[in-house]
Length: 432
Ligand SMILES: *Cc1c(COP(=O)(O)O)cnc(C)c1O
Image (cartoon, rainbow, N blue to C red; front, side):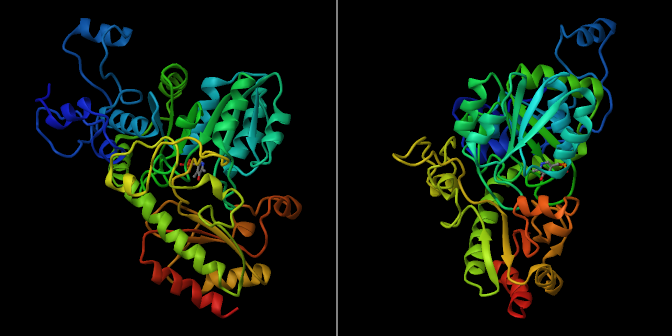
């Protein structure tokens, strides 16, 4: 159906770098010779004759049938993301939450148990606590950073360890490799929600995790345009079990959104390194501001798990200009240090102002440029007060236990000029 594509041939001949894969993987040029990936806006596909229809349905012949489970634009996004995460297969979903739901439906049954870090996304906690419990699946919540707490929570029926690292909003981190070893020693799978880092900064599968979850809504799109998600992993768990749930139950990704995410992936590496550089600049500046009590950012030397961030991050293929400039060597362990799993600090930072809620709200209300919204992973910077928004449903004791103070602010640092962001924050901070 398609003319020979020299770029596809070049990709097959060498191990391409991260950026090359992000830009080139997954597109099979059609006979029209299009340069940009097409959007296949069609619900179904036609067959040449009755025998071909029967063969496609039986699986004897591989090919498109119906866009709930076979759409070429969605498949291009899945192949590209799988390549970037270093997984065999990706399955795209209608949202990040749908990705988590289909993972649970595909891999768990009544009587199974999950161990999850306490600081995971609010809707994920709700899914585990309120809905999965109705089907006989229980979840224990543990302190993200304490490997001993994870170990103590594992039961004979535990099937999944579920983690988000860095956490929201305090950017706490856990070393993925030992957590994966712990999971495997107990016959469990490690699932990492890699939404905050994306594969441009952290590749959990290379560190031993079994599955990676994405809310593509965030950095994969990167421009706040669409909702979607994905699960990445091996051919059996993801390609069969989880794909089977999406195919049957239907929380699939629309081809229009898949196309937006394909375009987003093309600039992912550039954006993630730029978000990280801007966040680090702001974190340093905030740290010396007299109105600021504390800054939480993985790229700061003061961060308790800073050793997990560094230029020797594991699992990156050298090759892109940006990649080699960042010094991605692929060395796993530096003597005496834990392996550095995260290539840069990412775009999310939090800070505590002196003066509690009133002071925090004053800083928010003085901004003109930063958007007051809980969304993240956009070119536009956003600011939130977790204690009264994303974590507002927790009782004040639970909030305090989680370290979410009344003076805490979270910024998802976008790609505007950093000096403008600094000036926008300074207006509120200088007045405190
Ligand atoms: C947003 C988010 C989700 C949920 O994704 P949706 O696309 O909104 O369904 C899951 N995990 C994390 C870490 C998120 O930030």
